[in-house]
Image (spheres, rainbow, N blue to C red):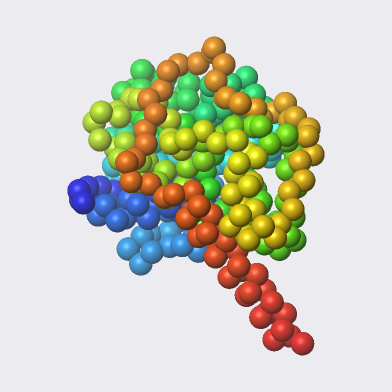
Length: 304
């Protein structure tokens, strides 16, 4: 294991992906500070916690002083929320990003690592996609004008522990375990490249090497999979005790077979040779959901 020993701040480090990246950075020997609106339930003893908003530019500048690297996972991260809340999306995802860029420039940080999305390759994704494209453009311009080096990470479909039901895999596993049925809004022919969040987190640390400086990197799964096959996997894991209903509708905000349209810049796709098998990943998620359900049952039982 290569020990980096850098001062790194992870904005949005209390969340699903951010918390895993913070852990991966700590495991590499870095001094990690997590910045988020809420305290992280996953905070390690060797990590620091700072609570605040990326809209508070003065506070951000003070927190960034003395840091070597900024990881930016903060803001509005759900595509559907972005579609429903355009003004909030602009405030958090564009203005918040510029606040971090300004603080990073003044503090003289070495690298600005930004969580983007493969939807930047698409005309889909609504205001969420617009905000990520804007963020990328501001990051590139800050490098051009002020020499602030960056790495932009375009994530695919993440799943794994610490997700909530805004995450599609978590939602389907939870439905299957709790209700014995899964409702899928599409036809089942939609294709995704699922990647386990810990695999994505490890790759998100690897990009600090020089070869990924001022690069756009895709972090997605190894193999394209139809939604129908993914749901059949859940069906088998749950001993075929779950029914699956395909609503058959097509959501114009989400891509069907591919996010790629002939619009954007080319990015490198980064994958690891050793990664979490999807079936094993589902089992891990089910264990976490099952423990939460048991905890709720025990809590209700103690009140009776």
